[in-house]
Image (tube, rainbow, N blue to C red):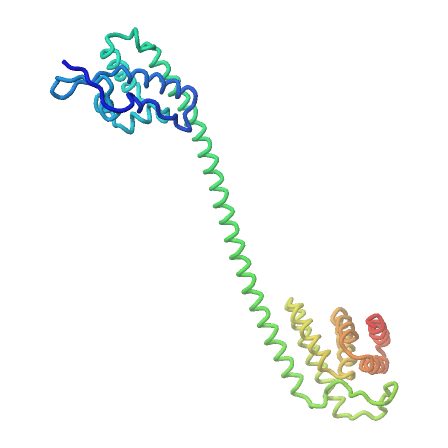
Length: 310
């Protein structure tokens, strides 16, 4: 029976670099398996030739493993099953005529394989811990996303509520403006004249005075309705619009009416807004009318607020 070797560098396939993730124990196991593979003597299919330097493909077929699996065993990437490791040893031992020249015993090889297997299990445990940590992090991220979505939905609902509130305020303002404009067109802030200080009219027009009182009554009733209904924003909108549109006579009448009805907070707010938003001449006229109506405290408060503004 003729012995023959393949061309090329003998057993070059057992000299590959170790896998990047191969630990020292896996590398020791890979080295032992490489040495065993160098003792393989493979017979040809006809039995006439023995290949003492087989290729990796021939060795893999001879050992009943795939070529890629053999590569992973010899580079330390994978730990072979105990059955595969025992088969490699037994085959090499038979081809070498005994285990004396193999450099390792069957027991030592299997113990080394078991040690590498334990190390792999430890790595798997670390990977499991990492996987659990990643899963917890993912769950926390999902909870955070859920919270943010809920927060966005709440903010969207709040925005819709604010838009509805704004629309209601706008409608209320337009309604108040229509009610105010229903009276005489000359009910506007007094025109600026050359007179240094306002002079009270001794003989006021009775019809105009009646209309001023009627307008003040309407505004007072509406303010009380809104205040009683727990709508402070609408009350403030009504007072601001009234300040813009009313005369000094209407202002004084409204303050007096609110005081008489016990609506002191509304009266105080109205005086403050009037002093803040109207001209000094309008403030002086309103203070004079308040004084005529014997609402002296509010007249003084109006003048003090206007002075503080300046």
